[in-house]
Image 1 (tube, rainbow, N blue to C red):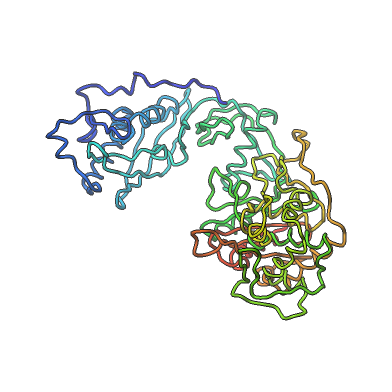
Image 2: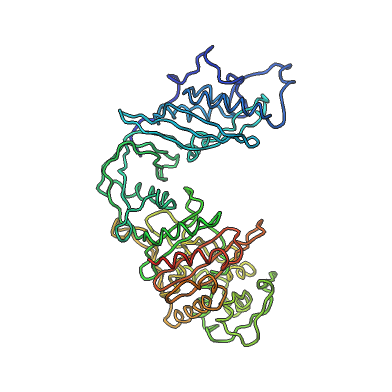
Length: 545
């Protein structure tokens, strides 16, 4: 980790002097539910207030807290929270460890019990200074035992990116900064490509010391979990950044960033099928938890790519062979329907069922498979799902557990216990495109000679040809036609709508390919796959890469 000693707050500049300045009417009273001290007489206890704090109390408490914090009086500020023992060291480290001073806090109008505010301050370290500004908010609550109006303590009160157990620090970094570049040498920054922020932080932690750079002076958030990367906030003095090559493509990344911003919650990943190179990763919103790479959700009917491969391999269907598609089908205790209970005419082909996303055509074949673990085996042996992927950053590598009866049936259409993210689905599409699993990577294997995951077998040329035919049909006249209309080249797709307990609207999933680029996207509560996630994938595929 970075250099610099941890400061124990046991005295010094932030001790509250008895009889000193008061920061609000309650600055010397704690609250026992959060570790604060203070006792009450029987007569005082009978006067304890209840109910939500009033507007006057909210204004008075927040002002007192802001004034104490801005003055560097951590003890007094902590006493105005419902967790004095948790708040004081964090507030003290603001000045002691992070060297942040000249603090000016400007509150905005309260919305109920929430008070938004902006912070403007100056970081000063060894003769170097830089401004720091950001926005956050706090909530004022009623103390459980004292009845006083108190700030509901969360680390985000001090900084919106601060998590439990993390600390703010300023000093010389132990890990040199990196200059990450795309496959063509274009510099990738979190300012231009916000979704890459957590990825760049991870790459710096993993490869900074071996990339040929030298340390600078920075202000950063050091997480409680040492396996997680530091989050750089301000650079006071630049060191010499080391260069780290990535497989990303700046054009595809820019398209991905634009596409996900059209939705409240969306993720997309693009992968090159012939090599496994990750060309783009984007999330909205951007958080330290990278949903595109680490998420775990049911992917809906996009998983029918894998199910179709398994059925084709077993010789139970052919792309042009007949496949029944009734409105519903029962398997053990579970009845599975098509969307809107649609059906296809007798004599319809398996390609038509795939392109129209007919659930029942897949479920009716389970008895013929006669192996409830067949899909789990297909996932691991052909598509590399559940293996230990070494992409260069942390990923969740998908899961298709072995199930029986109704749960096994749900898996055939991407529901039940199947867990995927858009990286996994982009990889599944890439494998279907070429027939061979190539583990996704975001930095070249040569960077650290890490061992990449390999699947035990490839699909036959016949199965690959049929899968591609069915995906092309989906993009040409099936459920993906509207979304893929603007995409050129040799193209294919698969839509999905994943039902989630507690959601009125399903999650929208879509995956597709154009020439040698595959992409997958999910839009939370986006509905039909072609409606929301489809345009996200199309925009990335159009950008190429």
